[in-house]
Length: 515
Image (cartoon, rainbow, N blue to C red):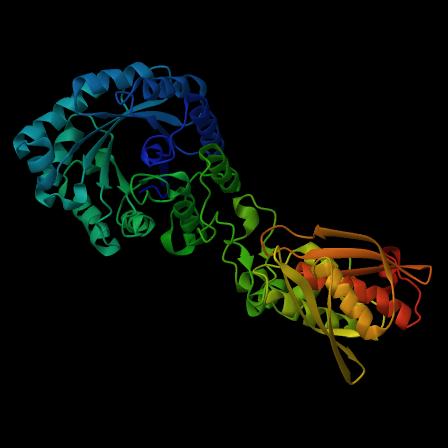
């Protein structure tokens, strides 16, 4: 028995049926060509009878996409099959995929037919499709909820009629892995001519088990998995192509099966679909989610930096990414923090590294994620600053269109705590006047600028001020997620340069402090 698992991609058919994922013809062709680069075995391009647009999309994909087999879906109805062939006949390799429901619940309420009539429809449909192409797939819709003896009878009949692939769909995502695997095994053992067809499975994800059910089916004899990029599809979606493929690749030692997928194209394909549909992948999505190769925990980061396999069972390069992502946040440790500074070309001695790490931890409690620009601001604000004669301990401001702007400031000088308040034209002006009252160092604000160092609502704001102290121009810088606090730090930085009688250190001198 072959150990190759065929990948039947139905992103452009079942995937597109999910709300919000509709694509025009040009977009479908772009996706289909990328699926060819991914090296899927079959592309189900659409349901030609469904609409004129679907028909044209299948026809254009059949004409323009080379490599994979191009399939079109049809009911076991003559006009459906004829329409599918009209679109598919241009493909070098084509497949008619025809289906009918086999569960009693569908027969009773949707088809309003008996078992014998549906069996006859299935046989006639397959025979008609076989007139056009040797590659005919038959699907028993809602197979999981079908009577197993009746299902085996239908499968045996359609194989005798020419079906080369028989698909066992879990149409409503009802199956449990052990149960589904057992069903495939029962089909293998009870359909007398099953050796003449490939068993395929098409699992939906209503219980979150689509991939697990697909893998269980493979373990019991299925040799084709029907899936979609990013797991899109009806309701909760289909088995995710990237999860199925990487599960088979990573656990080949246990599953002993492989696909022909070029896995380095996986991430690119996922992002292309997101770009075209405008619907992003959830961050914690397996394989292709933003966090799939991201580590924030200090213990995990330390392990990955020492040996990647401690916390990574596959490499990011294997799916087309360049490297893992060490996310700096409140759970990060000193090792990851030091490594990120090193990557930025910042080398600190142990004393300065300790200072920067303490400041980093304080900031991480206020922000969800720390970016490179945050780290650079920390280094400039914490490491490159002059000796703090005055240290900001507390700041509170009140302002409003009918309130007099007031700032209350508490500074620490040595062991002495000094507090005062002032009013001003705004909260920043009031802050600067309060600092002047406490320090007794008068200054004239010449310029004030602020910029967002990072993006997002919790971005760090960096304030740069130029202050004249008795004719001496001094620059001060401060950074914080709070704009008023950053403003106070910047002004106090300038005051401390005068109070400590230190010369101004510009950005160019920062490198000398990184040793």
